[in-house]
Amino acid sequence: MFVGTICHLLKHCGDSKQRFDSCQSKFDVSVIAPSLGALFWQYRYIAGPVVLLSVLVTLLAIVPELV
Image (cartoon, rainbow, N blue to C red; front, side, top):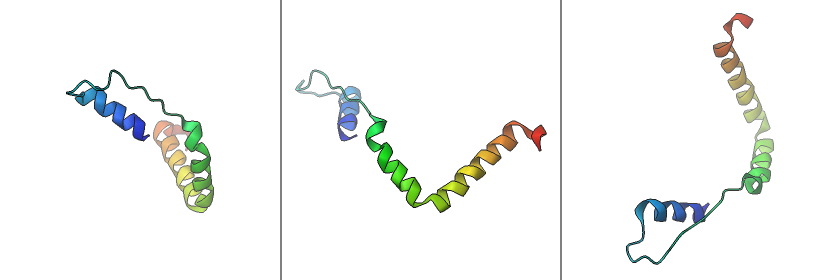
């Protein structure tokens, strides 16, 4: 992610001495997915009800005639 930040800065701010011609970076979610899964599992008793409540509120907002 650090490389992506540097590329973003170079793209938008430039390099006054023209030391860098181009910069490419890609973000691969599969690299951090196991960490996110482990984090969710560690806090599953908090995250689970929050996710379920969010889904319920969203469904109540989108389809009120179901209630």
